[in-house]
Amino acid sequence: MPYAYLMINIAVLSIPLWRSFDPRVGVYKNHRAIWSAIGITSLVFLLWDIHFTQTGVWGFNPKYHLDFLIFDLPISEILFFLTVPYACIFSYLVMEHFFGHWKAFNFNSLGLSYVLALLFLTLALFNLGKEYTFWASLAGFLITMINIINRSTFMSRFYLSYLILMLPFILTNGILTGSFSEEPIVWYNDAENLGIRLMRIPLDDFIYNYALLLINITLFEKFRNTYKHHTP
Image (cartoon, rainbow, N blue to C red):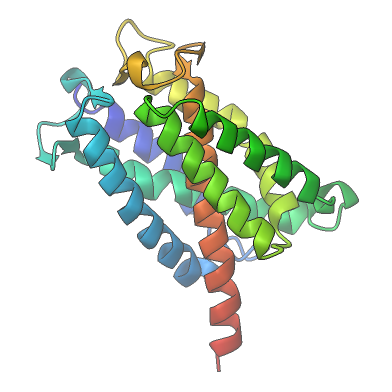
């Protein structure tokens, strides 16, 4: 089924894009900041993806994607870095709108940030020979430290959003890694990761997605603030 990966992208994007024009949340008003953040982040992660694909850290089952490739990446994989971040920023804004006034949504997250930064740094240092683990953990450490240094006020909202997004993440990545099928759409070389899986999802994927989403949210908040102050 060569359209399988493409259909996953469409499913991920469909509801967020449709509901983006709901005036109650006004996600459409932030499209400039959203796509600025996604554009920068996707460029970095696509270069990372190309390198890992060409060195065999992971790869793609040709049964489930179209034959058209760009630098060895299926077009569906490239779309992943647009659809998933958009859906996640959309969810972040929806939760901010409806639950932003809750005390639980605005807890002091500094301690949690330090714990995660230490965890990611430890994983990186103890897995220098495992490319996926090392780079995902290093990315998680760096973006967390940047937000600690900048005293970012949105981290509590990000953490709760990330936690809530775990369910769709596990479902989507479960499909990609073959948790619900005989063969995976995306395969991983376990010599380059921790070798620990939830269902068939490498544990490293949770760190990778943490870094992907936090970089997007960090840039989005930066651009949202910049554009707000420069709008006539």
